[in-house]
Length: 490
Image (cartoon, rainbow, N blue to C red; front, top):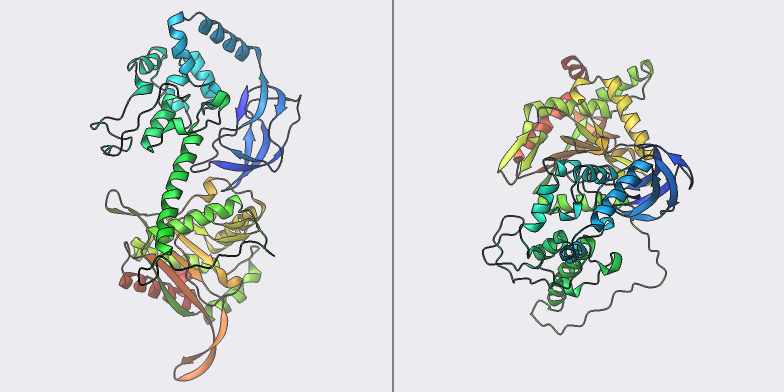
């Protein structure tokens, strides 16, 4: 059995293999943890797909692996081997006229499916090669199917693999295809789903060199070709624009950018790549505005100093700020919401799960703390310490890294009086905390030293108006400047 690197979470397409916990020749059980890999979200365990003996380890520590890459060869039990033998024997009894059809079907190694899905398909008599499914085939895809259904899907259109886009045909996104018709040759070695994907991206398969077994064109080959086509088009537009000066003259000489010399090229980690993608998405999609206020937290500093020795947890200022935000979000729920552009609606959340930014050696991590409104100060302090520790060690689960309803980032512990935090998609607001410092303030007509901090609220102006953001901040300031009242109200 060829075990492929599994899909470890939504949006994850690749990872870096870290270590094996087994050796070649070892006997393993289904779901036994056999290795670890680091994705762009977290360090994840890799479970064995079935009972068997490890025949070959295909990945080494430090290797980059894509979802679907074979990382382990497993010699499974006799039952699985028997099933494979029976399937092969039955395939050998096919009548001659079906040989060409069988030859066109994709090799099983090109099909993205977990071993338990393949076993289920064998038990139900379903040929996975016949399913028109882009991407990984799951158990849910097999529900309601049987061998006759699967065969009918393949045989209902004899020329399905060679079909030409008609003017009335619709693309997979439901829109009418008015683009240039893409005709796919009979000689192209590609599965039906790959052909369909090529039509969607307007790619001529005959121009692609397949990377699969026997030169078969895979989904990745098509997606790579689509990316190259898109990047080529964008580069041509940028080059044409750059050649023009303010007068429209396209003959202006541009100095070449020096790319050699005393430089260091550092490959982006998985965490850094996903951070870059999300921040770019946020800047591109949101109408972001930042509102900055200075809070006088002298009384809060005195209160924390008086009680921090009475609790076991490391009590920082963050739990107080989180509680102040919950109180303000109750009064201004649009800042605790998500914009659904497709349905033209604002989804207001009546629960309070906060993401907190944690600086790690691997990059910025944003673990989620659930139910902030239902936790007391000590509980929040313990949760913050636990999530920060797990983030540093790379032990956060996929669920712990999912977006909450609101985010807080405390850059002040490192330095910086004020800054512009970027909204964490799909949220509508994020609060940034600057450094706490002693400043000269006017109180009752006199200049006195006070402890102050800049609070920086970035919000999506498509969802939140400036006046509402200002009222939200006023409520946060009121509670932080009167911490005893905040504790009583909790």
